[in-house]
Length: 187
Image (cartoon, rainbow, N blue to C red; front, top):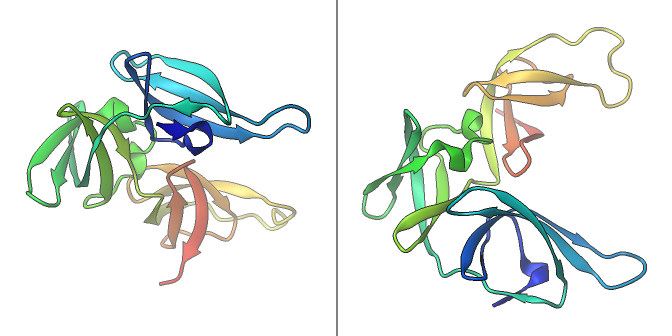
């Protein structure tokens, strides 16, 4: 059992005997009333999403999971192939589990994959990944007011909004938790 305030994205909860993966978690402390945690939970077997609010003092059952650290190898049709770093065993994971970060996945990137009763139920990517910019339009003179941004393409084919000073060939760090630009990496 864990406190509701400890619920975070990627955690797997057992509610009413059913497994749910946390896809969104937000701690809310209103000026009046007690604090609570607002969540979006994905039903593991079916895939439908429900919204649920927990009181901050409420206890929630977390599922017993086997965590394995794996390396991304390649995409094979509708699945992604990972290799266990300890015993070199390969596993195929459905693309739907990581669709949002797939355009930013680089070969040999390391992931935490959670298994429940021998079945992969969640994939937790690294927080940050460093990629090279493969396409970036030049900034126009006069576009520098405020926090102007432009869309660029990285080496893996993903697109992200970045500040205007980012150029083709730059290496940038992308935050995979919300698919956003973090910083330019010095060579």
